[in-house]
Image (cartoon, rainbow, N blue to C red; front, side, top):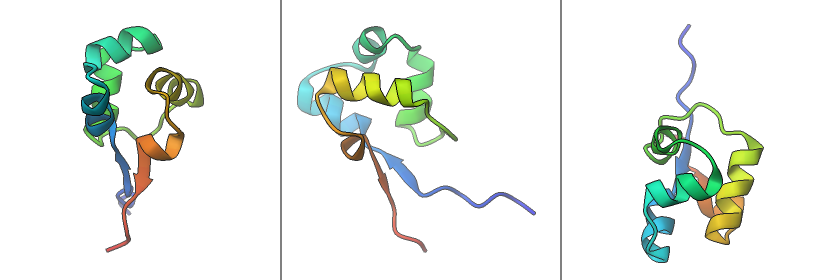
Length: 74
């Protein structure tokens, strides 16, 4: 039986645009790779470390709910 698709959506594109920041700059400031953030940004991540989410929120001055949201069930 296949695992159900997750419904979590990432809003890094919008947050980065609002702050005039690049994904590369965010990755450097958070201390993670651009590849890891790209996977998250493109909704391909299966998990995120709380330490990474905390770093993103600190750098972008936002809350976890600004970064991630849950799409409605089909």
